[in-house]
Length: 142
Image (cartoon, rainbow, N blue to C red):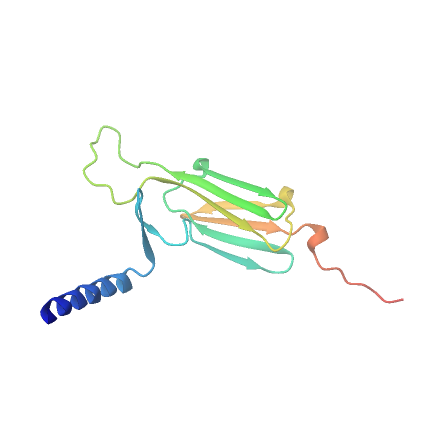
């Protein structure tokens, strides 16, 4: 009996080791391995007058991206399509084909008419100017 318990302990230790190696990943039922926390990975900054968001979207063309804004709600969606050359059979696919949607609630409303979006080298950069009503105002005392 004692030997079997040691075997079980070793098995769980091996599982813990594998989990620590892949700590930034989680397993999805139908999509295989995927990045925990969603795709694309994003960074967001606030300089007072605007937000800047940088999202990693490697392999996604600008025609396959959709960006929507309403007030302070931002949604980025897109599709990574096959890059297989025409006439070739697929032998191995490790770069998964996928669709994604990420949504964010920003800390302030955004002026949708002044948003700047640039896709370069697999990075989507959004500059989201805050609406005038969301910017701080200096009040003078009479």
